[in-house]
Length: 147
Picture 1: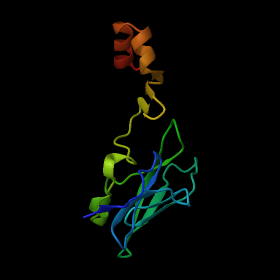
Picture 2: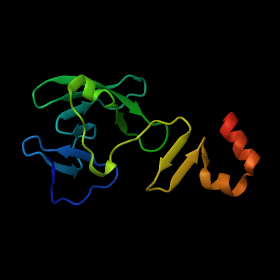
Picture 3: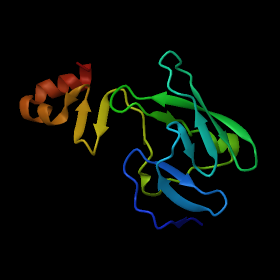
Picture 4: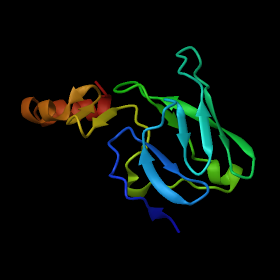
């Protein structure tokens, strides 16, 4: 049901949007840094390190309002991860991200991956260094004991 606009693919960190009037999918940068437009307006407060329970407010085109949790990464860029895990249950709505380009697939306490920068860390160690400099027992100990 969605048609792509003629705009070029936006780089990582883009703010995907859907024009609620025309149902045309667009990937574009949005002026307000913590506001996303995804078939509805989602607003998040500026990051506050003291507040671990930040919430995003989503207002659907029919005017209904829902609150979603915001998570922060421990490494890399300081971006807001809006938890949409229960969006369908709360609002009978899904998000649409063609190409899976602006979506985090899971949360991990032991890995960090930044594909464009070529970084892949396991428990803080670059995986390439583990492959080059560690033997089987070192890696097994790291996997089992975590240090």
